Length: 254
Image (cartoon, rainbow, N blue to C red; front, side, top):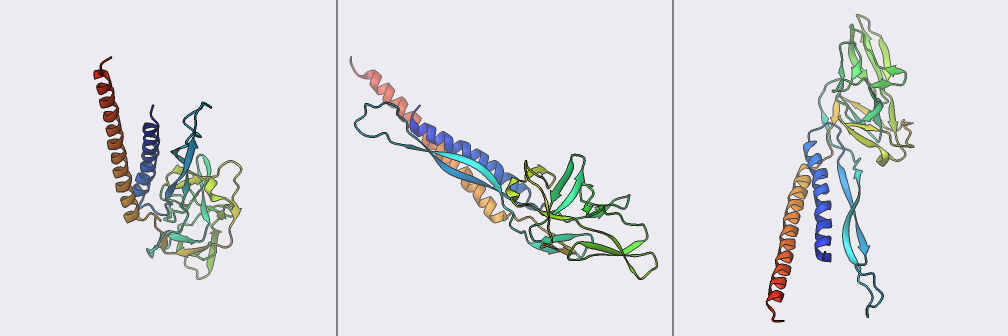
């Protein structure tokens, strides 16, 4: 097959995968605490010829290779909700939640209290404190979440604050090794261990919105689609050129 066709096909394959990444970002524009993914490209050089009887040196052909995707952990904008159970993390920390598959990590601070009095995420996973799940009593009121994650309440008719736990905040030496599992959750990759995070702060009554820039992502989607279409047209033109050349060659008298 001609090198031009191979290069064009390699570019189309990477564009298709890049479109999947961008589409997923667009689908999560309104997901609390969502972190966008980005594609990482590199040039892949390969010599098309492998004989040693050419006068000139072999030319190298540049193929397109999407080497990986990476997480964009830049902070999303904070939005005030005035809901005492909503929190936004100012820093690189993650909340620890308990799922059926084990501990997972999230930046989604839209929290709730379930029927058992546990502090849970929107999907119902218990949020972990330093001493386990955080549980409230039916008579608790005036929930306060301090900047360091310490949770206090006014219990019953009393006026003294009662401690219900402290949010377990963790960070990672290399967060790019975290694996997205859906549901706005991350799992620790192989050899990745969470470390207690004391530098990050918690803002009560706020949520961190998605860091996806809707205008930028929609522009990228249009750009990718147009590029794919242009390459398809170019490959079709190349195919037509080859077909015409073969047809004319067949008409040449022997």
